[in-house]
Length: 227
Image 1 (cartoon, rainbow, N blue to C red):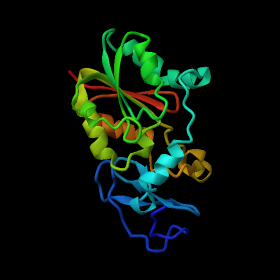
Image 2: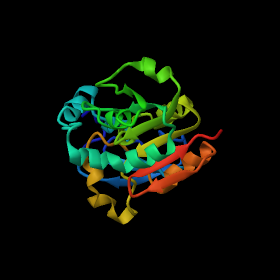
Image 3: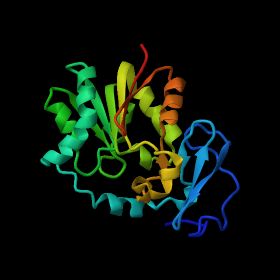
């Protein structure tokens, strides 16, 4: 870990940080544990880990290499179906999609292709073809990805720009629990998870993009680009 802040989350800690999603300087200290500390944005409600606590790319990839995402795993397909099924209902039969952050075992893309859609893959570690980020898409999926983004404002705006009018962005990430439960929330313990969205954060994003956020369960949100 490339931290200069100290394991107690206080030594060397700057007094304020700008939000990596909306850019607001109106952030406050939210929580600290034995490994890192967390800020909360007063504008868009994002909770984020300061950059000094980010892992190196090599450390990140070593953890991702341990994931066992097998397209033949029925349980894994069932997990992805929480986003796949509502997306499939909304996209055109000949739709062209992008699986952003597909990981070492692309599965969601295969599920869409089995239903006649075409899907491009992008992942900075496993499918780093940035040419696909110059395309246009009817749908984009990001499953268990956005919590890893170091520059979410730039990266999500780029994805939104790739969508055609009426296209869909589907995001799967665990949304924040009430503040009093955060210290015991397992999702924050993954050292590659550095940003955390609440319902309010997604509503802020939807407002910025002049659309609505459709929440499905505790971890799926769909956003449609206006015509």
